[in-house]
Length: 196
Image (cartoon, rainbow, N blue to C red):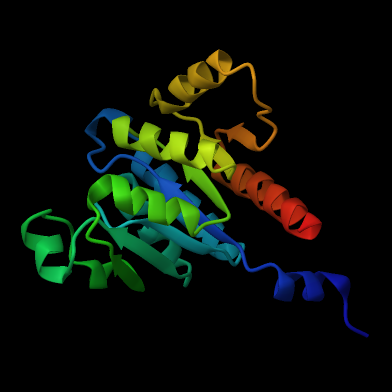
C-alpha cells in the first residue's frame, strides 16, 4: 500500500526563493545565523532553494542549504562568470551554489527571474533591493514568508501592507522562527498546488 504522504512528496516539488541584503552590517548580530538556519530548514523540508548569487543574507541561506545537503539555484545579475566576479565582485559561485543562472539583466532583472521561477519567496533582513523583490513577489501573487528579527525589513513590509487595503493578504505569513516560517510557507504552497 502506498501512503498518501509519499504520493504528496512525489507530486509536490516546491521551489522557494530567499531574499535579503547583500550587505548585512545593519542587520544585527544574529541575522546571518538566522539565514543559515533558514537554509537548513528549507533543505530539511526537501525544497529547492533559489536566491541571488550574492553576498550577505542570501549567501548564508545558501550555506545552510548546502550544509544540510540541499540544492541551491542562484541568479546572477552578470552575463557570465567573468563579469560576475570582476564587475559585480560577487563570490565565486562554485563554492556556495549548485547552479548559477547568468541572467545579464542586472539586479532588477535577475530578481524578477528568481521570483517567477519560485513557488514562494521568503524575506529576511534587507534594504531597498529586498523591498523591490517583495513588491515583485506581491504583484505576482506569490506565497510570501517574512522572517521577523532585529532588522527593520519586516516592519517596513507590514507598513506597505497596511497601506494596501484593497487586496487580500492571506498569502503572507510572518514569523521570527525559521522552522515555523518554513512550515507555514510550505503548507500554503501545498494548498495552492492542490487547487491547480
